[in-house]
Length: 340
Image 1: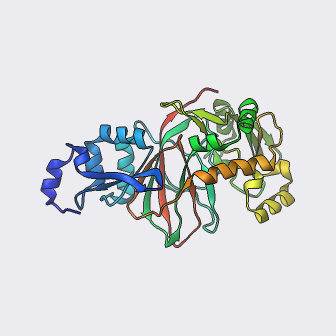
Image 2: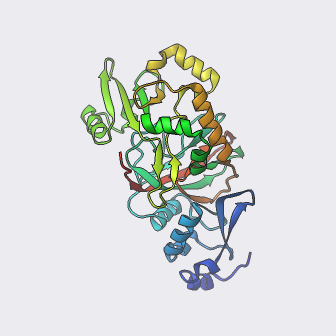
């Protein structure tokens, strides 16, 4: 990599964006992610992005996944700045959450806190919300010793791999997420909705098409019915965009599944999914959907300083088991509301 004096680099920023970076697929085996690296050592990612938003936006819409590597990225503060430079509007709050998160800025969070020995399967962030994020931005502050990848998978490909009869049944019946809170497992409703005020929870549920039922012992049950397929807001591509398989009890590891069903019974599980009319989803259907996700999975190792901008509608993401410390930041940007 060529090294130029700092003053020369700064004079050149903001003009001829493509002259200052190399762009290529990270792997010859997949179009995702597209790797963007500087041609000069020490190029500041935010200084370069500041003058080149149209170029980045065009590249993003063409490639759907941009992995910025070997830039000076500026750590946590630099990551927050970058999100403002490559996306419109405010970052989405992580409310109606399914996992604990630590906050590292204004609606900047760590990725899912979950035991490192387990896999988190492919999913589109917030598919069960009414407002979806077009862009998800990840930043690697601390890369783990081993594993800990954040794989991605094309959910247009997942849609095409799923048996049309299964797709059509989901489209006709939709899917439902049922959650039980304050059962002594998973997150309490106070953390999920980021409030201790029941009235605030009720207002949020009403605004976001979530059925709710208060139960004895400060317990809460919610149900939200959503469409399984999303037409991409810009391209119109049909996408398998839901958590129907992700939250289904049969997707859990066998020993966890057995313990949960034994402890709570199926109707009291912290999470489970059904068809939108309340009907059970056959475990073989869930296995078929998970196999479609697995066939689309693309995995690559994190390097410290990496920043990964993905189309959260077109690309799902996951997490591999890991050892050592790991800190990956995430911000969700550019919300939109699909038709009901």
